[in-house]
Length: 364
Ligand code: FNR
Image 1 (tube, rainbow, N blue to C red):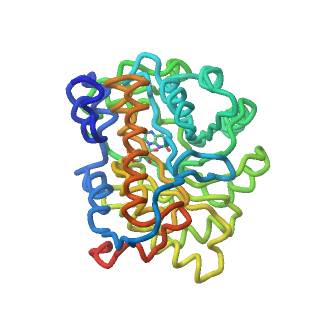
Image 2: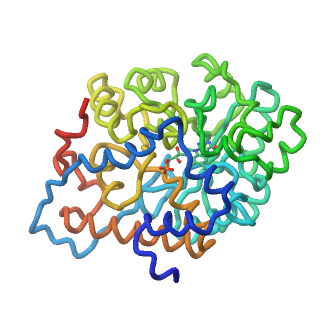
């Protein structure tokens, strides 16, 4: 179908399921075990209802925000997803260009198919990148990776903490992995028989622990955000260890099946941190299952600073390239603007917790 027939993010998924290679679809779409958490990530939003306010001049809406102090045209960033070249011959730079045209931030993955150089080189003036880190068992490599990202201009370090061991993504495991990214092609342990994820992740340090934060601080001056926090307890620890932000995330359901969705954890974390007087110490982000403007606004209402989005942009990129990613982002922006008007909010600051009804959110 023509690009202008894509009216929402699910439309891109449907097209991608038809046009992607079997490897790309298996890697992008897959999630752990029975994929219960993957489905729940979006379904949880169905249990949040709005309490719109009326009669508030909504002629003008401003959905811009700042993420760690950096401008974003709306409260969404492109989260890290590995192996962009599985979906598009040019890989992550497609997302980089689309992010620039929409003035949003892209988080560059450790396992990008493009090098940090290639990505930095296509950046527009003033464009902001964050960097996602998979800590290597070899600290010298980890240090080099972090320092390269910082030298290339990345403005924050998102350390992935929910993947000390890879989840079983069975769709992906059934595939033979063929397209290793350049920097890991020589890895001895590269296992070509158990899917893309397993093939590229054997270096990840399962020994990562809270005491390592001091070391991370010593090797970078970028703000540090932990990606994959799933309880209030760990949110409190993240603050205690001086992190600048946390992403409530279960890795798109690709790690621990039956992990709760980020949006469901958000009220627990916000209320808990507030009670302890720690809420102003960190920015809180949510990812997983964001598919609609209403999903974004629900997260904002419950206290998120911004949300991350993964698969839908990979699907848009795989089906229509940069123009597809730009349209997907525009559709989301339009949905956010409509939602704000119908809620009675002119700015993100006007979106308050009493605009959502969450009494059915936690169902267990
Ligand atoms: C991911 N995710 C991820 N996270 C991370 O920290 N490092 C990584 O390399 C990857 N790679 C990756 C690949 C693919 C194909 C997907 C779908 C996801 C997780 C990602 O950052 C994010 O947490 C989820 O994708 C968010 O959920 P949605 O938006 O995909 O539903």
